[in-house]
Image (cartoon, rainbow, N blue to C red; front, side, top):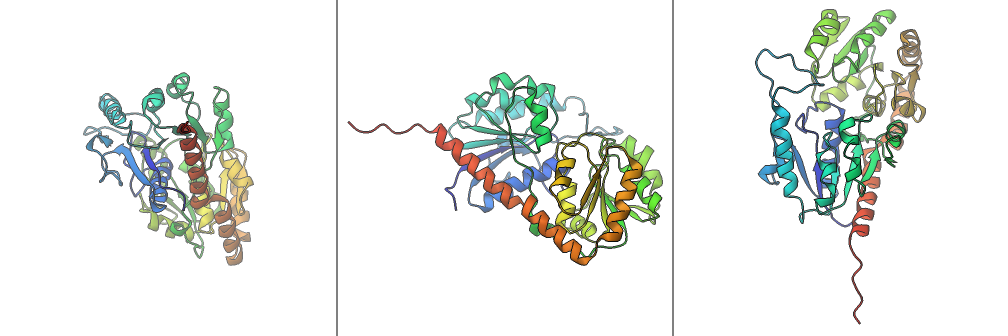
Length: 368
């Protein structure tokens, strides 16, 4: 085991870091904290109140919870009035406590404040890029010259390279013990946030074209979109909505399905749905948008078709359903464990942390 480090992980400001996960980013941060703690590191989390892992940290590390007023129609792309004017100052106060407490800082916050203050926080910072270029983050890059940047895919790395950021690709990892091999089944599954950019209504179209049952699972992140494009098609038989499932329930659903669908209408920086499904042995048919195309190229049992080509997605899904047997499912999982394991990601992250800590500490002067 490597030497124990004192690590501060900074989470995004929107949702608590806990199960059931609000989205892929929250899942990734939760798993990073858990994996580092399991390896003996002292990890503190700055995150929205209600998150796991906050019990042993300062009260200031608990950021205000997001609450929508009665009658509001929440979306994942907006905030309720006044929320950021409370949460950003709270984050600022939490950052005030960092100097002298930590060896390294792992920043996953989608706000630019940690980058802006990176030089004064008393420890080297690793900032992971989870999104396409965000103007608010780009504006802080001149103050973040000593920050080590990671990107979740080569697509994301290339996106940010245009801003002068030299990022190292470190893909998200999947805890294989949480996503066991499943027996398969005769239905399709779609999982993720129910928002326009994830386009689950296209998964419904694929299922109907093939005459197959479809189960949708995930948090409704845009109520107006869900009520307009998704929920009217849910009949409990051909299209079922399972809601936001806890992780073990979701793994059981995916592992008991014939094929998983990924239908992004935007360029996904990574796309956890693919590796999670593959870990269960369930093949994946996807639009190859953004980082998803990379996942498909490096995986067994996943087909990526041109973004938006619904006919191609229907054909790919049909091929995977008819050609994937029990032995194929075992091979799919085995390949996913080799390529997308959380342990592999954590190994690499530990090496990066230790390299930064060694470089940050001055070499002791020799006695005369």
